[in-house]
Image (tube, rainbow, N blue to C red; front, side, top):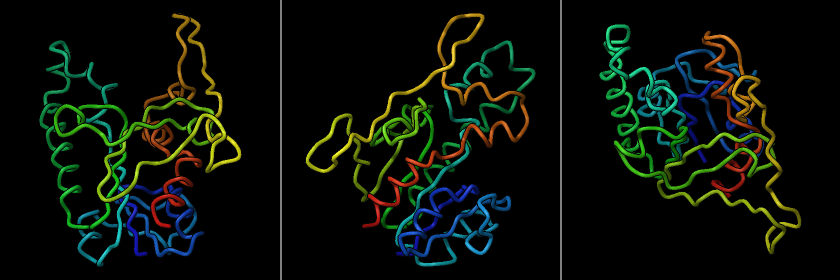
Length: 214
């Protein structure tokens, strides 16, 4: 299959797809960090969409203006500081809808819990990294077109001799005592912080490759 992995430069899913023999390409405006530049398109994603007759696309649109964790910046007290925030959120929603309507026959869109569920449509599925062997909680929404839900199991069953779920681990905030995923403790406010927090976990990448293209 010819597969586009859009808005994604770590190549986590692309590498898994290539391992199964598919012609997969990551795509982002920035260079790849996965080590395979020959499999990366440094292009606008819609230019990449128009460049080939793709069989499938998996999109990871930027979540900066979509996630509920950014809702606080829409409060009235931040209006002067971030006057363009509402417009940027609307543009981000329209970007996702345009990806969904791009004409590729099989599509998956990944994003954290956010405004897409209320401003566009409910996700097909919500998954966690610990559903697929990585012991981290991070609610992840999937919108699927002509693709099955990702299968996972908390107990051994007819399809798996071992459960795919593992026990999630948390970090405890010393001030509040609340528990959080370790990914939320990445320090600083640099671009690297956003990049680290948005990386696709190996178990999810493997499940996408194995379940969606066989």
